[in-house]
Image (cartoon, helix red, strand yellow):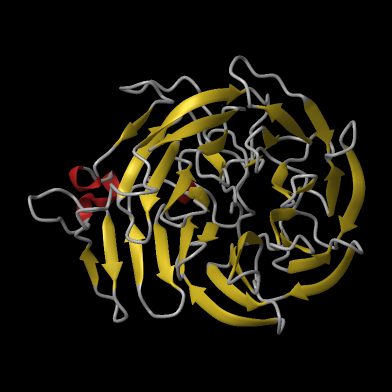
Length: 410
């Protein structure tokens, strides 16, 4: 569940709190997030496809976490043997210790070995949102003004099979979510209106629009029963929509700056949101109130709740990934990304998750302690990601104006 920091080109949407930065999106070259003016994150990212790497930029590779650490962790404690550590356990009293990974960290049922690139989808604009259908037949890529639909069920070169014109041509799609039956797609972005598309029609068409007072939607989530949609707004509110009646039924108010990312847990009874106000909040959907608030020293760009364990993974502007236990004061902190963590998604089995960043990386991690399962280096910032329901495919959206489909190899 995603947020796009300094990655989007300039847009007409003005952030409601100019002292803070708007959510990340596509980008033009900037040096680093930390060097940007404090009052605003100009939506631009280093989007250079001419970077040269030691290995093929798109090649995924196995990595053995205990043999490797990022430059970020060079100033942190080392594990025995002198190797820099990148995963740390943080106790209730704030004590940080390198994590000794169990012997089965990288093996066992449901743990991938690596990922292999299958398809490149040349969208033509920075891809800020991606999703893959439950059947894995279709991928949806959101860029400037439109969502493109791709049939990835067959090998060979790919061209879009449909284009959904959702927004003005200069405004970016920020999120697109399929309803569980795969027959409808909800799209939000740099506009006050969400559009709901009928994918079962002979030609996809808009069947409803939902309009709020916020100038932009940064993230979307759909309840497991497909009755309710949640939109994270640039004004910090979380709007709850009744999809059957196409009406707004509630707003959760608490974030003091844009709400950037969202996920649902506990069988659809709890909502988790992250914001540009440096907080993660948990909401009780039955009682309509805030249950928890976690404060950080960095803006939150992405988060995801483990489907079957009490862990919440949070991607930060600071480059850290933090995995919080939601019922006790304990967490893990991961230091492999070297820039903003722009998107994050758990596999449906809950045993692993992926994160992507402005550092061009796709990282796969073991739940909850963050042993690095594999890593893929793309040629530009990786703004968005999704994992298929059967955990066999990963899709990423890039600042290089393309999406990539990976096969997960077990």
